[in-house]
Length: 274
Image 1 (cartoon, rainbow, N blue to C red):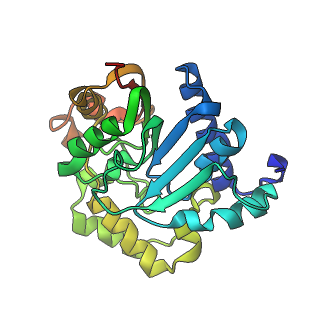
Image 2: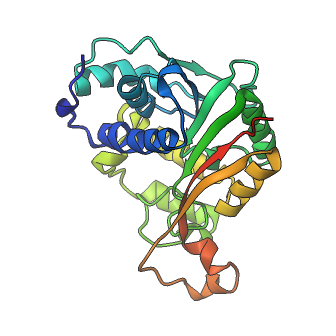
């Protein structure tokens, strides 16, 4: 058994309780029967959200895949935060290479992706989505969340280094690196992912800068269009806008206000039965 009352880590709590709860609610409301479902998490990270789903909703199988092996730390985190002796048998993970086809691995009833699609190499977006479409059974569900979106005030994912809204649109890449190099690595507790706990400061700075440079700059509408182009039917979509920010004059004439203020998209799409 496990005990959620033991959770003291903010990062673990936000991904286990909040993200896990959101994903489960959206899939259940769309009719997914967890007990018989095969679920793929595309970009599983440290696997905390997958653990929440596996324990609390008990799908038949849940496979998390990622380019990195942060999920290897999950057994230790699960032991410390939940008192769990071992990961559940219905949960597994795999490290993949860029471009690895998912459709050859399994046929899923649902595919989920939490804050991952902004990191997919832009020229591969259509190919990746087409592959995920092929990896779903007819009638299967695709859930995705992206936050923050690139053109929003802190869409660089570098807010810990600067509190200037839209800094990445107002500064050069070289100037952004100067901010990263000069600023202390003062992570909030809910920002301390596995990398922030096990890597040295120089490695973390270089990794975060490279991640920033490789962001695909995907907008909410582009994601919708890509899904529909692949054959998905959009069933539910929520876009969140930030409040209390004045758009700088330099940006008003370069970008639509809606693009600059839309911070998050949560979307559910379905593969048609035929």
